[in-house]
Amino acid sequence: MDKNSLPWTTKLSYGVGHVFNDLCASMWFTYFLIFYEKVLEFDPTTAGLVLLIGQVADGASTPFIGIFSDMENKIPACARYGRRKLWHLIGTILVFFSFTFIYNSCLGCEEASTWTQFAYYCVFIITFQFGWASVQISHLALIPDLTTKKHQRTELNSIRYAFTVLSNLSVFMITFFVLNASTDGQANSEMCAANTTRNATPSQCSSTDTIGPEDATKFRNIAIICCVVGSLFSIIFHVGVREPAFVSRKKHDAAAAVVEEGKEPQLARKMKKIDWFKELPFYQIAALYMATRLYVNLYQVYMPLYVQDTLKLNETFVATVPFAIYLAGFAGSLIMKEINKKIGRKRTFALGCCVGLAGSVWVWFGSEEYYKQWGIFLVAALLGIGGSTLLITSLSITADLIGQNVEGGAFVYGFMSFVDKVSNGIIIMIIQNSNPGESWYYRNVITLACGVSCLVGIAVVITLINVRVGHRETNLTAIMILEDSDNSKSSVEGVDNPAISPDSVEKSDHNKPSWESKNNPAISTISQGRHSYDAAQDVRRSVCQLRAEDTPARCECKVPEMCHHKAPKTDTSPEDRLSGGIEQLSVDKHPSVTDNGAQDKTSV
Image 1 (spheres, rainbow, N blue to C red):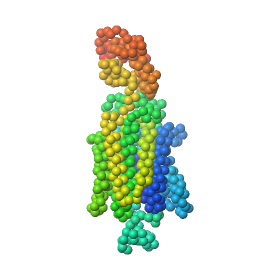
Image 2: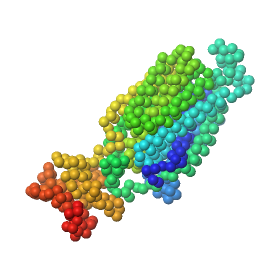
Image 3: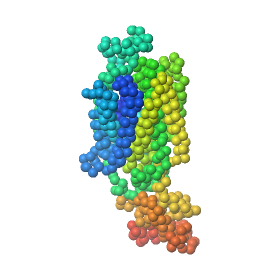
Image 4: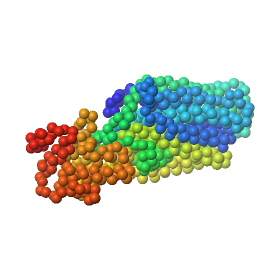
């Protein structure tokens, strides 16, 4: 597949590949606590513990899936299908067969103790989370495989998020209609009896007033609809996306010259798993992604409880307010590509934090009648626009971090997801365990927890101002040594080695530049990914030898014991030095240059 251009069918097929996950995630974060507290009647701490188990299971699965998803599949049929798509398929199957049990009454144990039901639900939740993580990591890791262009990666993330928003809107619409479905007279009588404590009149008694145990069947039906619709979109993804064939980095040249959009060549090296932990931006972007997911997940989890318990609105607002959040987020995602191109990723992320912070602060002051009627929807719009901006931009920055090192893409996304899931689980558990049972509590949660997440995001992006995301300092060790010379002008070409220039690089039969061979052992050493002390010493010797043998007059080695080729400087013209450099570098692979060098010297 041509990485420079993606057909629109591939883009759309890729975009729907996460719809099944999005449908399930919308129910998981939006209705999990309200289902387990109001329908199953778990106490807040137990409900929070169940959610924590799921988040930890998801977080523990992501690094495992990332590592194995990056590996080459030795089974021919699976290799042809694609290593990413194979894990996506496995995850889809697991999610399909486990999700409906999470939003259903405990089969055969309705009257059992709370802890028995706790164990029952944990089995299906762990299975679901492993499958969900398989789909998420494989789908995200496919972006760097499909394209190397930054604007196309942003576009794929925008399309992906657009379908995420549409998926969430679909869940809220389904929930709205299902929860408003008519029930029998017995259910209405039970609801009216419950509403007597709120001084409700008989005309006000309705099955749509509050959520309770009688709504268990409704949540089960919503889960079944999500599984059926999500499976159809997963089929479209697997049919419409052709994953590029995986080629082991061992089969590639150890150092490939990567030229992107007119930029200077860079040397891409293979990143081992341990190498990522040596990169400071790896931790900075992990913190950025964690702050993003905390902000989005916390308002998604606690907005329904805030609407019902703090504002005391009827259950239709449990669907309409989240609907407004994601509708505004969808509108924001449509222009996200252009905003990123105009002001850059970091400024876009900071802008999203400011919008999200404004929405969080407004929640603190929202208590008047206007707020309950229409002000809550304006707050929802701010939260949605801020959330979509942070999600799209943080995922794009993560793709930039991966850069050309697609062999570790799934591992990077897995680590980011691990930090995200574990931190979310712990924070939500703390919030649940600290619940005093007061109506104002969920207002404080959204304002303080979401607001602090935005502030953390701003603080992290400030630390990234002078960081070139995706730039590996260890990639250019040999080049930095070459630049030690006071007269050096560039990493590959210049007066230190005038024979190495874009015009003089000749391609061998294996499309490998001739200067990346034994003629230039300094580059070869680093290209092979050697960064130990011994490798550094070899590089120094190689650089000294390179300078001395190619152009003895230019030998300026600062380590005399490593270089025995230093010769007295002579008055040599630039033409002679250039010709001598070319002849020396080309003689091993192109003997004819020696014979014809004198004839071509003038033209060079």
